[in-house]
Picture: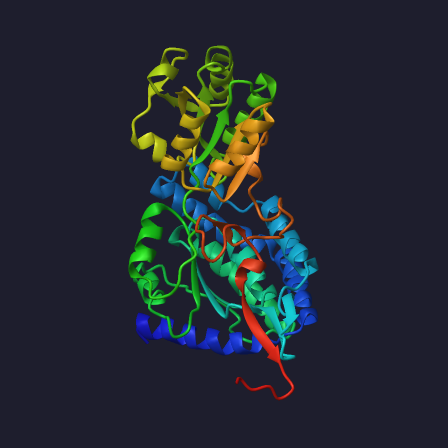
Length: 417
């Protein structure tokens, strides 16, 4: 069987499974997730052994510390995966929810209800915990899943997917509800993107080159989870202590994730007082700073290039720009950002509300770190990713984002005149 035939077979199997999943009871789905959570804990050493192979290969390839951090599965992260499945099991099942309903003047009862999308293809890089998170959300929302992870996490992804698939089948979930593409051949992505007969939506998580390729080649609708070029803007009245706390958390707590800050904007009135202390604290945390000309007049740092303003570093690197006004800050974010997560630190209600209205991003913050952009933190359970698209969903893509709406009409013999 060649690669094309292999992917088509996976697609057919996923479509068959999705037809059965559509009407699967909540009880079976929830018990399946709880069972897999137990199985993940029991197979912790097996998962870590597989992950060790990926980490060894990653170091040999020269992956950055931040990328290796995204790849690593510790005891705590495996436990977090298991807990995540239990959280999803406890969430309300969106399938069958009545969004709204009304009675037509002729007596027809018209309702809109949530239904699964069908088959979800997920293409992602680096983070093997996505395998469990995505499979859990798709199962709970009644969707079959085709997973294609990055080659750098192949052993970890296969180990997790095998545990997941076996566990849910033992609980009564249809065979082939969760499948993984096991080849590292890059051509597999292209073949997956041709499966419009079987796959209803593609959800990619990765860098610009991956997303660009998927947009160019896909015959299937795409909900993109692009890079996180996140900003924090310190307005002229920002509280220095609060600003420093937020900036350090947004940049340094976990720099290799998509909701970490990549660019700091600071009002020219606040910069002389605040920037030197901020720079000292950031550099003490091992952060490389790259600044505009006005920034470099205030602190010792490398010069920022135009490319820096549109770079997701995923590392301890931060670009800094001094702006003359609130309007300049917002314009910079909307022009150079990825419409992911952006924050303002201010004491002004007026400017806070303007920021929330004028910044065109999926998630906007006042006086808080961008690091909170996360399905768990938002009370959604796990997430497939953070959508930077405006269709079909935006922000953390969780259970509701994996459903569509169906009109259900009940009559008593009405015909249209």
